[in-house]
Amino acid sequence: MRNRLSTITDFEQHLNLTQDEISGFKAAVGKLSVSVTPYFFNLIDKNNPNCPIRRQVVPLGDESYVHPEEMTDPVGEEETMPVPGIVHRYPDRVLFLTTDRCASYCRYCTRSRMVSNAQGYGFSPSLFAGLEYIRKNKSIRDVLLSGGDPLLLSDDKLRKLLTSLSEINHVEFVRIGTRIPIFLPQRINDSLLDALSSHPNLWMSIHVNHPAECTIELKDACAKLVNSGIPLGNQSVLLKGINDNTACMQQLIHRLLMMKVRPYYLYQCDLVQGSSHLRAKVKTGIQIISELRGKTTGYAIPQFVIDAPKGGGKVPINPNYIQEWNQSEIIFKNFEGDLFSYPN
Ligand SMILES: *Cc1c(COP(=O)(O)O)cnc(C)c1O
Image (tube, rainbow, N blue to C red; front, side, top):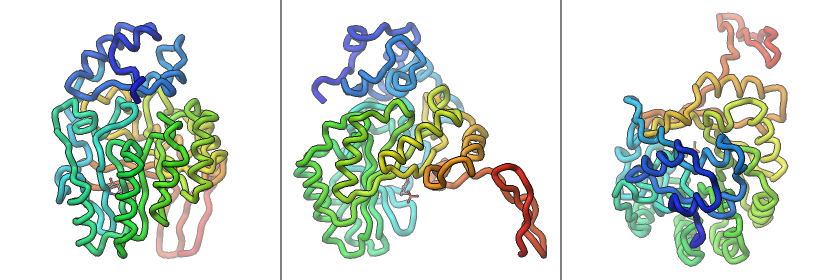
């Protein structure tokens, strides 16, 4: 973490920044800090300005362009925050934001209003108040720890947090949303695994976008987590010029299965300010899913979702298989486009 590349000078020592990227560093000020771990930085193909790793973490001048439909809080989290850090949108589960820090900052971050504190949000959640809220609301059976990246909390803090959650009887299921295995796989060490064992039913959602992120280091980190009994899912964001084609997505999800990671969600990129240059079309996502279905392992196919603006929640967006639905039958097409019918 101490050796992260954060300033334009840090980057220029190792990379020929383009004019567009130099403008990007200016655009990032007051929006979302730039920071990349040496490990992740070393995955960049230095001869390719369009390198999919580079484009995720090195800003472009386009970040200063705000499309009229973009927002600072694109999925309306602030409206359903009963206490700072708790987003209670669904009846049975909460999102628990535990920190505003990440190991590296993704340029399309949906929570860039608070993450890295570049916009002066001053996020300082009380883990105590969050736990109190969960304790009092017996309908909460699922807690999703996120941030920022919860695996940047100290082992001791994580142990206390997970132990407290394990002592709340109505909480059946806890998961951590993290990009640490991708940005800082060295963090997945024995003492962290020991802290994570403080909860008996902990799952983890990691965030891999491109097959180039599937390194030996990530594979080893996933193996450690899986061997400690933590089931792994992956969430990807559909990103223009990074992973928005079927061949890339297919390679990614196959590599994920080989690391015992179940592809969970593929997100349409949220309407966060300054992200339009990275946003692929919804139609592209549907196309990719339809090209995967039937042609690869069902386990490998993520659910494509739009996290609806203004707090509507995650909505599955699928290719349209149903052609007709009448009194007597449903007529639908299969993965090859042939029509079939099933009695109604
Ligand atoms: C994504 C999210 C969840 C978890 O949703 P799942 O569909 O169960 O993965 C819960 N709360 C909020 C606010 C979320 O954004």
